[in-house]
Image 1 (cartoon, one colour):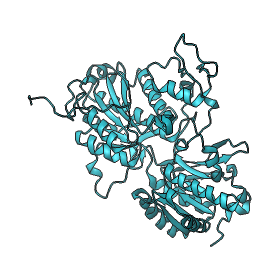
Image 2 (cartoon, helix red, strand yellow; image 1 turned 90 degrees about the vertical axis):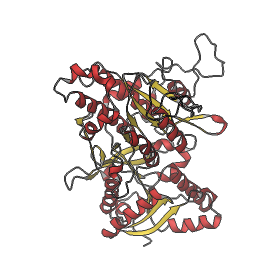
Image 3 (cartoon, rainbow, N blue to C red; image 1 turned 45 degrees about the horizontal axis):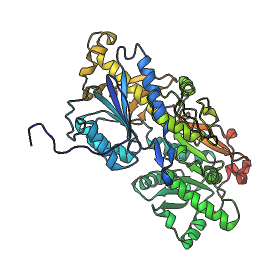
Length: 503
């Protein structure tokens, strides 16, 4: 083998979208589309993708923040597999077509930062790769074993830490005097960590556990006798806290469906969801049926605030003129049940043609949320954090950043950005103060939502409270109980305050 050659070449095909620029992000999404039977695409996480485009566009328009410089990105879909996450991570550190991390001779746009992973497991995997090369990674946080934080100095958490959420859970139970509750969590490391963290906090406040159920991954294979045991167990608590992702929620939906089919009665509980579950995890074809048991549920979500320009950006989207966005036409066709045709092509009479004038505001929230979600807000702030760090780095050497930035950006090494990211601090366009702390990007804040199902089977989520670990004591948990819509069984003041029967 000749010197300088590599015997390991990349032949795998993958979905990517790129915006060329002077300097770039790598962004790893679990899915922008995933496929059900017959390879029919189902869009997921699309708002986060649009938020990325919006934030980069806004930064590039700002003549003060990064003058004479353009940020870009490389987007990869890892399809929620560890293999793809590793593959993309190594490939972005290598010359195109070769797997030699650290050698990027043909890269014109330097990689300055990575946004991802989308869950704790993928974040840890990517950190084990990018951390070797000191590439700043901004992603969903994961728990560090004691004393191990120093092993990951290039990782920056963009979502709030979970402990403030646990504190908020306890405060919520105390507020409504709910002292007889059940816990549901998946039988894995995350579920065990949740239960082991929350149980001492409940015990300290004399809140009793009706049951604790760890759900196995093969829950769908549950036998009839096991389901009967589950019915009896879950009936012990009128308030149930559910920790887990879409798989855990699907397990609950199975139990609720079988219960209602066999007992000919609704499965009425007060459900409290943690932030691990996302609304867009629901399959829109079955969401209305599956959401019925959760009418009146309370749901902790990552904090977000309205970004006014984002709404205008969404309204400007045109699937007929996607401007290089090859995801947009496919997504538009799916959510509006229409077809985009090439100019001059006559569509079949039975086929609905997309006009490009369809209104995003008319889409149900489980298909697309018009207001920025907590996950999207985290990405928005992450993009601006990197931009502000770049601004600080080039303005720290005696000359104004405006004069030096464009000239020196091509020489930036990703590791040089690390100290500036650690110290970044700014107010975003929504008025929130953004900085990195032990609680994540921004303070440890969560919104509390209430799920409301209407008679016509439409539904929405309404903000009824907030947790802010950075607020003064006594103001860290706020709630508007009058705005909460409860399940029918508990739609009385007595029911709200005294959900502690079967003790």
